[in-house]
Length: 367
Image (cartoon, rainbow, N blue to C red; front, side, top):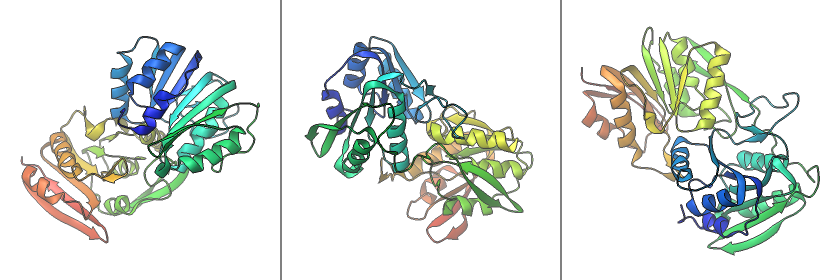
C-alpha cells in the first residue's frame, strides 16, 4: 500500500484527534489506520470490494483501538423522507464525524458523491482530507471541492500527487456538486431468447449508462435453463441472473467482488420477485460449486490497466464451480485469449458467437 505516493501523502498529513474518523479508499494501509485508530475514539474503515475488505480486516486486527470495517457502497448521511432511491446500507447521522479521509477514486459520479456526503457527515469545523495523483483528476477535484466547501488548503505536493484539506465552515454547502445523483437508479433492459428483463443499475457499477455490448450479446445466446442451477460469475447489476430465472433456472447465485454491484443485484432480485442469492467474492471464491451452468462476462481491467492474467484465472474459477459435464458460456473481448486456457481445462471448447469486438466461448467440462 505504501508504494502508493498518494497514500504516503495521506499518512504524512497533520493528525487531529476527536470522536470519529471515516477512512475511504485507504485500504489496509497500516500507518494511516494505526494513526487514526489511536487518535480517535472510533475509526471506520470502508471498502467497496471483497479483496480490499479482507485486507482491511487483517490490518484492523493488528492495530490497537476500535476499528469498524465496512463493506458496501460509499456511506452516506441519513435522509428524511427517502430523498434518493438507492441509499447504501451504511448510513450515519449528519454531523457524525470529525474527519473524513479519502484516497481519490476513479469515476466522477462516485467522487462527487463522496464530496457531497462528506460535507453532510462532518461536524461543523470537521475536515475532509483527500489525496490523489494529477492523472487521476486531483486538480479538477480541488476546484469542485473548494466550490462545495468554500474552503480548501493544499497541504503538500509530491510525486505528481496532491494532498488537500477542506473544512466545513457553514451549515450548507456553498454550491452543489456537478452530479448529485449517484445514489439514484437507472433503468435498462436485457433481451434474451423469447423475451427481455428490466433491471436497475447506478453510477459506480460497470456499464451503468446502458447495457454493454458483451452482456447484450451473451443475453441473446443464453440457453434454456429449465431446472438448472446457475452461477453468474461477475454479475454486475444482475441482468444475466434475471434472464436465467426467466429461462427457467431452478436457482441462481450471483457473484461479484464489488459490493456496490451486488447491492444493486439484490434489489433487482427483490423487485423481480426471484430467489436469487448473492456472494461478494473475488472470482467466486467460497461458492459451493456443483453448478449445472456458469455464465460470465468477466472484467479485463485491474486498476485501469488490462490484466492479461485474467483469462487463466477466470477459466479456473469457472471449472472448479461446475459439476462434471456442466457447461459454461463466457463473453469476452476478442483480444483476450480465453480459448487456450479453456482447452487445457475443458473437454469441449467452441466459439458460439462473434460480434465486432466480442466472442462467446462455450465450454463443457468432462463428465
